[in-house]
Image (cartoon, rainbow, N blue to C red):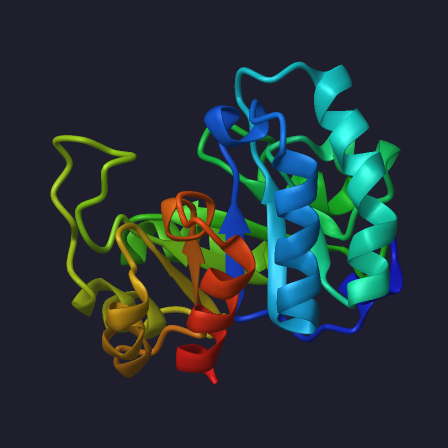
Length: 212
């Protein structure tokens, strides 16, 4: 793992991919722009449930040096094997991933480990082995059609039972950053807010300005 995970300064903006984003022919260039614009304030999550392991490794290896140069954090979503093979800064786990306790044993010292939760009970169960929690879906979002948002108050409820940094996810536009921060969020995790922008670097700058 690189030293950026070992610095133990959790970025406030976490930018998540999906298979649609990864399939873009200009993904590598857009991802490099995100890393350069965000620097130490951004973590890029390589998430592609239907993308092959070979393709994920190719992308991770290509972005590894760029992330290090920018001072950014580069994480694998779900795939501990990918994080180890490409010397990434850590792993973000999903509900169907390895248990956090097992993932922690496999990862080297200094690696970031996070997971997603939806409630205080889920947070309490996961908190022992992870460094941060992603909480949501906070607001309704096109990536989860038909799912109502839990509302930003869920962040305060989770924070009351765990002492970990929380990242709000789900429909968090730049205009809503202040709202989730007021409920105790350390930062935000976003997908469409960055990748659907004409200029991802400008979108990153807009989020970071509000997260400062």
